[in-house]
Structures are given as structure tokens and as C-alpha cells.
Amino acid sequence: MATITVKIPDPTAQRLRRQAEAAGKPVEQLVSEVLEAQASPAKTLREISGSIQERFIESGMTEDELAERLEREDHAARGVPYDE
Image 1 (tube, rainbow, N blue to C red):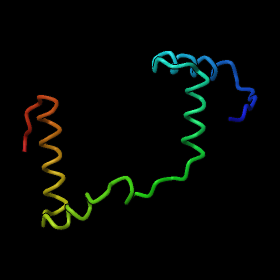
Image 2: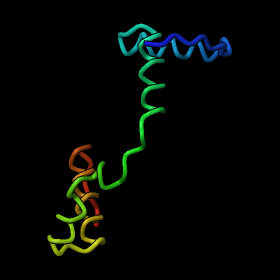
Image 3: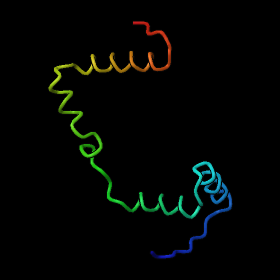
């Protein structure tokens, strides 16, 4: 594993320390994970969503119907009545 020395502004270092503490890991590990994520190839939407789009198309549901269903589910999850 390589070691790199990077100078960052003090406020940035403080934010990184707080984030690392909240995540329960050393700041070096947090920074390493962030850099690894940035250096990794970006995933395509297809890789992220898998077969969701295909299943949506096969369902025959319209985009408006999907939006309505998602809105209802969101309200139900938050315990808020849904007004049509």
C-alpha cells in the first residue's frame, strides 16, 4: 500500500475527523475509502439499477402510475395520510 502526504485546510481536516468519528473509524481509513471510491471506475446506471428498468417495462405500468405508487409508499412509510 502506498503512502501519500496531502496538505488540506484545517477546516477540512476537522470535518474529516468528525465524519470519521461518527463512522467509528480512523480518519486515515475514511480518507482512504473516499479516495478509493473516487479512483474506482464509475458504475453505469444499468449496473446500479440491475433489472429494475426491464421489470418496470414488463409490468405495463405507466410512469404516472409508478410515480403515484411511489408517492403513496413514501407517505405510508412516513405515517402521513396521502391526499389524491
